Every structure is written in C-alpha cells, then in structure tokens.
Image 1 (cartoon, rainbow, N blue to C red):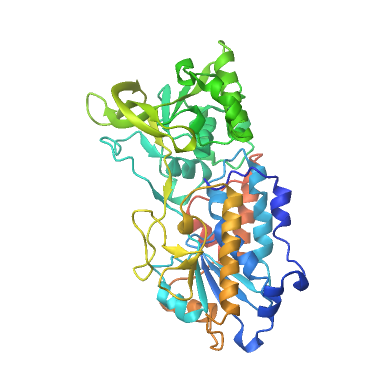
Image 2 (cartoon, rainbow, N blue to C red):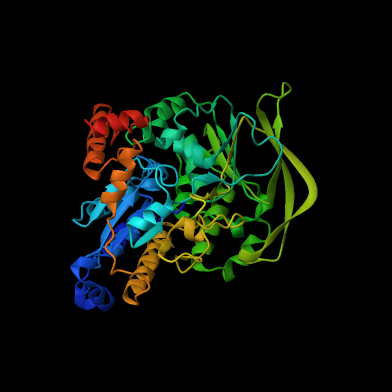
Length: 485
C-alpha cells in the first residue's frame, strides 16, 4: 500500500538531490531569513511521507527539521509494509538515511505523539508541525463473523511476516488448504505470493524467522483473491500480477465466465490496463501446469456478506459471497448485488480492503467519514502552522511515487507560507530541546538515529548468521536495550 512503485528507483532517487539555490528561487528567498529566526519544523511520523517532507524542507538554508516516530525504528511501511521479496523497493532507505544524517535533521524514535506529548505542545515548540503518521487502522468489512479466529486484516498479516512488533503474536493457523483474500490490490497479491511461494524463495529475505517457520509448515495450497467488480477494474499493477502467474509449482485458477466480453473491450483500454488484462486472459487460456501442487486465482463480481463459522461456532471455516453485476463501465463501474449467493470453504480469510488513518490528538481536526485530517493542499483546516502529508492527508492510496509527490507538495506549501509571512518566524522556538526535556519529565527517553543504527547493526548481524539480509527485532524492549547500550 503506497509502496509499489511503477518507476525505476534511480529516477525516484534523482528527485531527492538538493539542487543549487539558483534553481530554487523560493528556497533562496527563504534562505535570506536571519539565523536568529531559523524555522523549526516538526514532522510526526518517520515513514516515507515524513522523510520525503523532510527532504524538501531541508532545502531551506537554515531550517531545522525534527522527525518524531512512535517506534524506536524509522522508515514506516518501507520496513513493515514492503514485501520481503521486493528488496529493491527498500533501497529508498539509503536516501532516507542521508536525510536523517543531515546536519539540520534529527530523528526522535520511541515518542508516541498524542500520548507522550500533545500536538499543542509541539506547536508551542515549533514554527510548524507536519502530520505524516500514515494509516495504522483497518477498514472494517462490516459483516457478521469478521471477528472470528481465522480472519485477519492484510495490514496485520503483512505486519506479522514483516516484523511489526504489535503483530508478533498473530500466529495465523495455516493448516487449511484454502485461503481467501478479499480485495485485489497489490497488498492482496503480496499476501497471496507469500502464502504460496516456495520457502527457498523467501529464506534469504528479511522475512521474520517465525513467519518463515510457519510458512514452511503451511498446508495452504489454494488462494482465491476476491473482488467486487470485474477484470477491467482490478487494482493491482502488472508487476505484482506477473509475479503471481509466474510462481513456481502454482497454476492459475480462474473462471472463464468472469472474462466474457473482455476481449472486445481490449482495444479501447489505456495501455497499462490493456497489458494487465491481456496477462490475465493469457493465464485463463493457458490454465497452467496440471501437475502443479498449488493454485492461485481471482474471483470477480463477488462481495463478502458473512464469515461462516464451523459447527462449534469457534472459528471461521468459510465465507459467503454475494454475486454482483456491473452498472456502468470502466473505472467508474459500480457493483450491484444480484441476489445470488455462493459459499466458499476456507480456513484462512484475509481482508485486504484498505488501511485507515485514525485521529492522533483531540486538538487536530479529523474527518471520520473519509478518515483523513481535513486540509487544503496540506494546510490543516482552521489550524495555522499545522500541515499534513501522505496517507493522513489524502487517504491510503497510490504508489510510493504518489506519496513522494504529495509530500513534496506539502513541503512547498509550507515554504510558501514561510515566504508570505503566514508563519511568525520572528519568534525563536526551542524545538527538540524543549520537547526532549518535557519528555524526560514524563519518563520518556528518545531513540536518536545513531542509536537506531545500533539496532540496525544487530539485525544485520543476526541475519548474517542465518544467511539473510537481516533478522528484525520484534520486541520493543529489546530494541530499546540495544539502542541505549
């Protein structure tokens, strides 16, 4: 979610270089601010949105940027969301590290903003505060049985195999043959691929050892990826689809009826959508190797209506789907129920229908319906000096390039407000000095970037002993012990 990039990483990295002042007149004018009124900006959230926002703000010659992160470790969904078999996507961590090591940037981990320190306290210590804390909530399916054992959100399942501390005790039961994933975006395909990939493909990645061991003993042989609309509305990208259809020892399991009339529509599709659809149709036609032990496929025109429990009522053993028809066409087509139902036996159900931002502090406006901080171009509604970027600004959509551009835009708006005098830079603000002192009085000790590097070194050391890139620490207390040693 937000981390599947369609563009080469070297292109993205080029956009992070600091250009000469003559190419950035706006930055040059802000550079003219006296050193006695150095702009101090606080960013809440140490994921991609936070780091991309910081990169742009550091182009202001004397601006100081402090990044506060709830966990002791930085990088957010680049660390905890990107699939372990996509290491190339994680290369952006190198760029974020350069930002964190910039002389005017500081990282402060282990700070739970909204609990350890309030937004109002941050606003008193900084000229501007940027909310970039992402979307750590789950969208509910709103159907009976979704809280039964055997049902997981994709966010939690991904967090389990990627080492998110809050998901370390998930322990999914993989003793069933069929798994159903609800939703057809890139995250859904990531989960399907991890469930079906040979363990040999994963053992050298940074997947957690407990997840690797669970997958090695998995009995899952069939994964169905369910969507409420049709093949022409599927939300994944071609890279993820190609990886799925090329999985070793896995054949495609599609319903030809789902693709009726699709061939006639191909000629009018935009090129990316056309290539995606052609690849699906090729998989339907070829069917795959009948000798393959596993299968994976899409089920279109279906919406979940109930998770079915076993006879004892104690866990999920199936899912009831409503069959849909489409009203309209193209991206705007709507799914309408037909009244027909279909039951699918399965022991593992993963809901991949989206992440959701949650309110961080009563002082911050929040739109519960859209699950975002209401804003105009990144300026938080009716709150001078408060800004937002990333998913909390626009919702949990798009690839990493979307988050990058969105964060750059917020930074540019903030810089424009500095130029226009909308932020009072004549008042000296204490920044991290005051906040760190305040946190100390509350028994909160921060983790600096140099201390995160101790955690990083320990993870790489543990990984090396197992032939992996790293073995992530799963326990926050252990992280802190190493960081502060």
